[in-house]
Image (cartoon, rainbow, N blue to C red; front, side, top):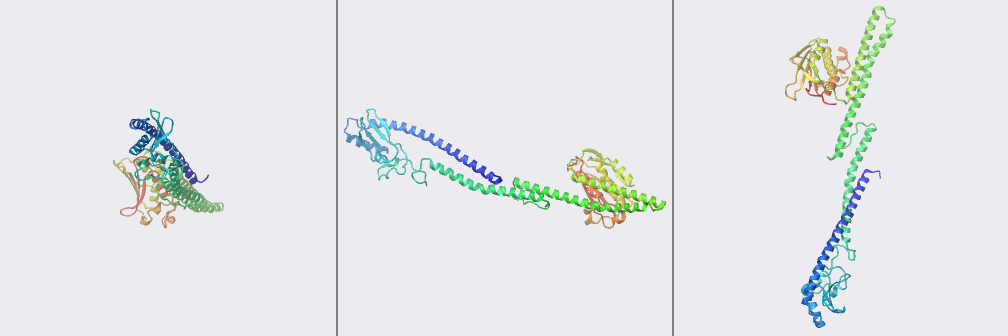
Length: 453
């Protein structure tokens, strides 16, 4: 049985069947115990009736007609079928209700009297089917004609059949009602399985339908979230590979050209070609380093180190490389990876020097006493600025503003790395307009431990 819904349904059916049998056994056991108790009580009452009737009936020396009349009278007064035999077992008299009950299958109950006679009666009970015709009006002994069958069942069935029929009906009803529920549950699992298979076959845009609010819906939602992240990572890596291969062609082509000209060039041009080759090698080295770093940041799931980092000396060291001004009133301490934070600050400063003119200012603001307040680093320049509709796109890998490639070069990975590094530290980076002209890149970092990736 390979289908999950069949196994679940079979389990439900077997459990219901066992429950029905166990319930029937318990109920039957209880009824048997109750029947024994009732019969014991009835026997005690019959014995008491026998003592009372022995004192009330005419003696054994009285005529048989007198004794028979007394039996018939007491039968109607007590509403019980009665019969009386003498000491030799000869029937003296019997009431009409007793004679009718003799046609049934149940035997009478014998009560021995002290004078040797035997009093016969039937235990009280409701009429059973086949126990004889109903009594005529005034014959009240018919009220004790025997137990009645279970309602709505045909006559002649064994005792206890009614309980079995009811349990079987309950079993069939629950089993029939459980099937659509189980099938609906497993159908959603099958849809989830089909979605996973489609995704595994390479259809990265495939998503499963989320319905309901149970655990299966939660699994489907988690799958969709994971599938979207995997699709984004794959697309990012594809774009990274395509753009990196494109960017590698330019310095490689320049290097190939310079090498081909090196042997035939005069000495003064040879030095210039060597410097150009060195520049292209440095460009290739920087590009490869940035591509590898971006790939590691995308793929790594390990939490960043939680060491305390004072940004003031770090920023001061990097700012001195590009002759940028620094404005810091005191220490600005965050927790994270010093090497990655240094790389993010360096990329912003080099970006400002390349595109932002000569005036570059770095402002540091420590986190306030409020736990939710972050530390801020602002790198501002006096360049042409970034259009509002492109302030998010410039953080995309390999994206460069129109005309910037021709003016200052670059491959468009610097700001993308800044966003990745700041995001791994639980912060955010924004591009804003600077008052008086220019651009400001603002980094906000939490003062606490960095979030895991």
